[in-house]
Image (tube, rainbow, N blue to C red; front, side):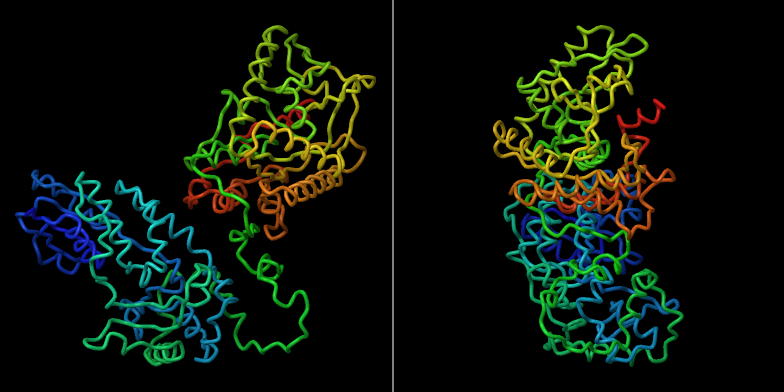
Length: 624
């Protein structure tokens, strides 16, 4: 029999039972925080299981006992099922309610602001929950579990998928049901290198926290998980009467108000109540019922279909315009990117999150060294060139310094090529890599950037920059300007997709529109008017194509950055470069909806904007 000691909060009793079910020869001593000042761990213990938050108290244990093994494990906290549950203090004491020390943030706030019991009960509805962000706790909760696991050497991402199958797997945010405790136990056994006799102890052991606080899963919150909920609040179970102290919503609110009648609302301390979102509760006070109207097509539309609910009401950082997606990017997928400079943010987010970003040709900022592909005409042309179906008549440009550049990627070599032969060798290698990329990628992300295009009058070849900006000479007899229309852009995209699918039938495509304005326009129009035209064409074309293609998904990075809700704060002082905050918002929404697993928001928060982005269009400004 192996003696062991487990140290931690209320979760450790269940973990110890799971461990004993998995490894039969464990004899585990349980020490909770209240015991730590008076109890000394058993000297016979050879293994210490220590919850990570209590690690500082035991950091010198190895110095005292060199013969012991120490395994740290995370404490679990998960708010997605119970986003209204909080702990609050009144002065130096914990604010107690009818179920114990945990309370409803809505009820506390309503009591502080003089709501009646009836007014408070009326706050428990979908509209209020949406205002407070109660439907968006899953990603942060899941990311916290995964991150806390990583800190102790445990991979809990797969465990989380297992827990989800059991429905609501917490009684309240810090009281897990058996499934999560069993998952932690599996992680501990794996860390010890032991072979368990039982892999799923959750099927055998009792729920040690069922007799403590059971917070209701509000029906409106439960619905998003496909579960049933009800407003039944229960504190610690009484002996021989496990549910006798359960309260419905009206009884719970009434008891709270009675218990707090002699309290000073100004002395309440709770971080959640300081969240500006809580102030939105005041909008719902004494709201008179609206008169019934005849049914019409807008009678039962969802909140995301209404501007007041989906754009005006939420905090700007919570705006999420994605309603559904046709597919997810898995970690096994090879993801390629191309397009305007804004596309580089997506590639960096995928790499930072550990996804399989596909690089067919080293040395560039995209999946191959093609530089910026601003227009759909360029994209279609690149496919034809890489497949040997089109060889432009104009193959080499020379700069004023005597160096040579590729007209179709004029800034790929900042110092230029010393001669035409080295340029041609680089181009052959490049096009071969692009051809391989078309065939091997599982997902292609293309960011549409511009409609203004400079073309050859000889064979219709499209250039990323006007001749003369970064090499070559502009000749009005050989070169012309063309501004693509919606129909032309749609036709280009459809032709490209058809040709790509001819070599890669299962490829999935994500289309985005760059929010970055034109740096200059070649037309004799105000640059703001030309920018609006260009982005409108690209946005309309992307929608038309994605609506008609089952494996083509439009992602609204353009809307997230340029939407009026942000009041322009997502653009830098030049009103053109996208700020780090804007980039992070886009990437947070992208990874939430387009990736297969939740990703910590700090990954997107590390992304930087203009100073790290290569943008061929900047050469226009430099050439003035």
